[in-house]
Amino acid sequence: MFRLRGCPLVVAISVVSIFLYGAFQPSSRIAHGVKAPNTAAVVHHNTGQIIKKVALPFGDYLRYIPSNFLSETEGGTPDLAKRVYPNTLTYADALCKGQRYWATIQAGNPDPPRFTQTNFDESGWTENSGFPQIIPDDLKTPIEALGLSQDPSNIRRVVAQQYSEFTNQNGQRQDDPSGGQYLQVYIPSKGTIIANENISPQQSIAMYRRDNKLPPYTAAQYKDFIPEMHRWSDIVWFMWTKQAGNLVGNLRYIFRDNVINNDTKSVIDQVFKVPSYSLDLKWPGETFDVATTDDGKALLGTPHGAGIAWMLADNRGVLGQRELKITCFTSDGYFKGENGYYMLFELTRVQAGGS
Image 1 (cartoon, rainbow, N blue to C red):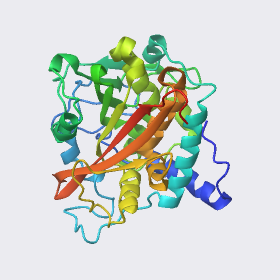
Image 2 (tube, rainbow, N blue to C red):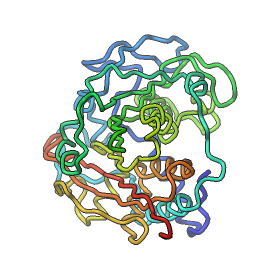
Image 3 (cartoon, helix red, strand yellow):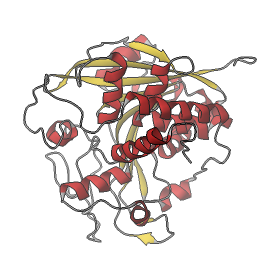
Image 4 (cartoon, rainbow, N blue to C red):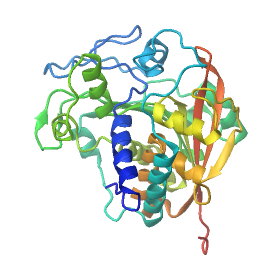
């Protein structure tokens, strides 16, 4: 669905390469096949054996896996003054992608995916909401500042887990699920989604194969191991419609909680012209209008912006035309002296007669 027309050929090629590289980067979950201190047994990819997992949010694994924060060549406690992002997305490439995403949002996707509960079930996803219905501690300040605080009874913290037998993209039944998980906090009465802990099926498989020194799959091979319904934008929109009911069109705020992806963090640092991993910008941070600024479009062109871009484009019929602003901010010392990186995407409905 994504087209790169309008970019110079060299930039287009690099965008594709970096996009694919970013898709395989570690996210916020340990690779399946390995145990962390607070996990139960997990699915071992390619064994054909399904091992039941205990449905827990990712929580402390983030501090257990150095590869989530360090490149493979760094290891140990980092020297922040010397660290750089390995093979990361450039500002120019992110801007090019963001321009295309913004144009797609404005036009809307003429042929959006329309997934149902049957598609969700056939794709091996299950829904689990057996967690404390709370706002993440590191987002309480912005949540309160924006007037989004709610009684726990109005908060929905739900994870979608791809842990079951499923139909792959070739229409075949597959008994080796990926272990992908998407955990969000939904506050329908306030039009808010907090993207809490997320790893796609493709990322989960890629991490497993990398950690076990197996060659990466080709795009064609992935079709055997990934269902049609697998993208963050599709799963989260589907879950939002279930949680929000008749408030579905009121979506206004999407937080990206504790950004870990190196490409996204690199672009944020490039926007603010600071060394890698060093941004220190507490709430309210700084806000960029996507329609009128290159920095806003570059942020939209990051992996964390892409899913939101497709959610808006695919569901323009429900959401209508929206203005989009992106706020970046940090929290104190999330890991080994580093600040946590955060993004807020604010969707404001364009009034009749607006541009």
